[in-house]
Amino acid sequence: METVIILVFVFGYLAITLEHSIKIDKLIPALVMMAISWALISLGIDSFPQWFDSAKHSLLEGFGLLEHEEKMHLMEGTLLHHLGKTAEILVFLLGAMTIVEIIDYFDGFSTIKGFIKTNSKKRILWIFCILAFILSAIIDNLTATIVLISILQKIVKERDVRIWYAGLIIIAANAGGAWSPIGDVTTTMLWIGNKVTTTNLFLYLFIPSLLCMLIPTFIASFMPAFKGKLEKVEDDSDKPKSKFSSTMLYLGLGGIVSVPIFKTVTHLPPYVGMMLALGVVAIFAEIYSNSKFAISDIGGTEHNDHASHSPVHHSLSKIELPSILFFLGILMAVAALESLGILYGFANSLKETTPMLSTEPIGAGVSDLVVILLGIGSAVIDNVPLVAASLGMFSEPLDDQLWHFIAFSAGTGGSMLIIGSAAGVVAMGMEKIDFFWYLKKISWLALIGFLAGSAAFMLMRVIL
Image (cartoon, rainbow, N blue to C red):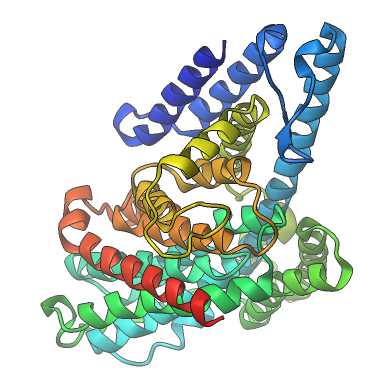
């Protein structure tokens, strides 16, 4: 039965990886393999020789001696445990997505466009990469990429030039998301799973992530694509813009940034702080929404666009539910493999057979090579299940160097292929970037940044 469950996971994983080829959204195989895996566990509960205790992170003693009803009760408790842990991540993401949509409702991100006063290609490259690095650490790398490419489309007229900028934005956004607990889904998973803390994540990963962004950007700034000046594009100043756009931008970003502080002070799960931040932002959104819809404006464009619903309802209708369902499916499917002790056994064999890359292995015998391969693997297959599997495989304590290296590798390794990260996939869709163009023009830059950052991390852990 274990073999069948592993095959279900492999075929489901393959379908997720080949999403663009088979034209089936990845949330579908994720949900299907989750449901089938747990159904097979339930039907074959008496045939399994072992059971993994997630709370103690060890195999349960005497599982085979339990009665059928006891095993079913244990399975239901384990399922509920994993659902609770998964729900923490999903509710957190729902809150963050809604705040971002509220900012967008008030056209808050247009404020960023006002920072760009030059038409030098090289300067604009640096401005966008630095913005991507900073923004992705606050609003996550996916959203930062969407925002910056949307702004880029208003500044750079030629698509052939724009795709070069988009490629470097992907690298910078993924690098920026790696050192922040709210910058990437995988880093958020490690943070919520009590594997890393905000302070040590910044301490160990900021410089490696910065180098991962700076070195490719520096090399690219000497390339022909970024020489000369851009043609000036007429500003769409006639477009209606809320007078509260800047206020909502700073309020929304401030609310998201306050979540790690809230967790540190209260020791409550991060999703509680995110719900508080969402509540505060929503209050101001409703107040500002009512104040701008004055009676004298009835019939105006802005009034007609927004009068039918509140900004909060509008924002909730625009969040990416397919992504939420995908995370639910993949995390619960990985939990099925963890519960059977499959990931635990794989981790032990990995520690014994993998050669050491450094003199001092990270974690309990886990080599640097394993984590670097995980980063390279995240460029080919989705990094969310890779990190979810790592959480089930390894039992190292809070802020162990293993978790920091996994956060960096999984977060930045995906830049090496355009399909290797959510930021790359969304940029691919927005600008119709060809897979092989990216492989030829951008991948080598991402690889250099990844290796430079990995080397910097190895140095940082020796120093610190």
